[in-house]
Image (cartoon, rainbow, N blue to C red; front, side, top):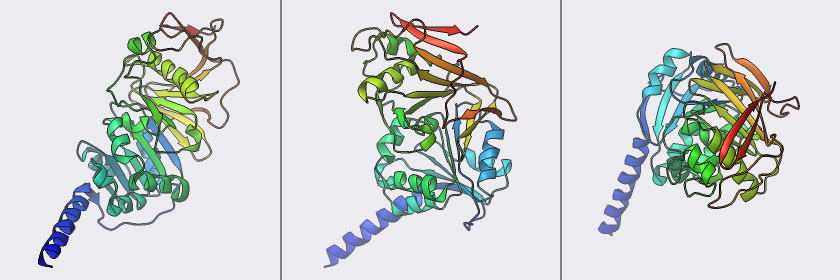
Length: 328
């Protein structure tokens, strides 16, 4: 009996340590508040955060409690966001294990947020720790029921679209993906987050800076072939750039880079293991719309109705080489 009691105490202590360890810092009020929120989504391309996009998100929180979730790193967002906008508090949760992701206390902290932001890091950790967990259930509650603004940067942005490059086998560069679309590093799965405006979509970040256009095209080819999706879409953002989407699907590009919207116009010609990708269709394989971001937020279009106008560019792949053809 004594042994059972001691065992029970040990379990409770371990459980308490886990719960306490999820929050690694909070600034502002220690008491949660409740505010009127507006839905919205922020897809940030990494590197320096775009202050105007973060302010857009916090404004939609109604001045409530902002929660940052991550699987590595520290509390760098706490003071930054608290100083940037009028909010009740900013708290960072370090959810770096399945055990922490399954704790009721972790889910409750997420569910209490009036705005939630996913920090950068390694998206495979997010998939490994958070998919099919209390964390993913709490995120669904925020998006579907509470309707609060939700965003992410870099890896945190990657997991917002329905399809994700999950980086299970580390990253992949464009040349390697185009040379062999089925190289092990091209690992694509469905996300644990469901945002209606990002259905059948795969997002990419650090776009122009890391020359990720080629691999993004491969991701789209694989989604068409492996998941039988006839009309997948790609959304990409440069560093120091963020795409903000309101509750109606209207998108605005904040920052100093560009936002890209890619839509296949035909099926790939060749997408097979150990063969270079081929995707041409008379030099019009994929249509690409490119928008320059501004500090004020340049209007893009409504994501429920992708443009039927002529794209800015056509992209094609011949012999594993990406061709980007501007429309005159």
